[in-house]
Image 1 (cartoon, one colour):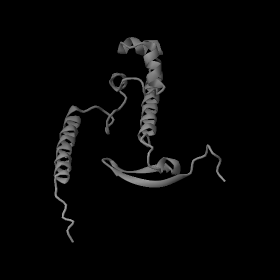
Image 2 (cartoon, rainbow, N blue to C red; image 1 turned 30 degrees about the vertical axis):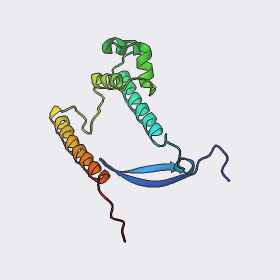
Image 3 (cartoon, rainbow, N blue to C red; image 1 turned 90 degrees about the vertical axis):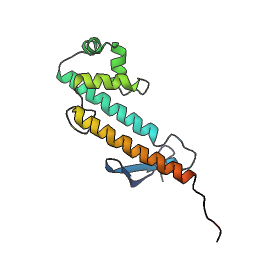
Length: 146
């Protein structure tokens, strides 16, 4: 029997923009009324992963936290928060530090403005279609006269 702190997980999948990814959904989190699942956990995991990637590159370049702080014009405490994956750090600061160190933020390993511009254009087109579909669905009269 599972203790009160143990969670039972159901493995499923969801289809996203970049393919199929596993869902690890606890039975407790599946209940209605838990607005934080899974976004809080996903955000925390992503911030931690990016922070560790930033730290790894900093260490590969034998830079101290203070060196990176000077390079990015942030405080040493902000760098430490970023490397620890703290969600209170503005995302722009985290991305700026990652970009300054060359940590990949895109699907490709190197920043290619043409790739990013094309991907942004595709995403804007997709979002426009989704907005249009949502608007049409909201204003569609349902024929429920059987």
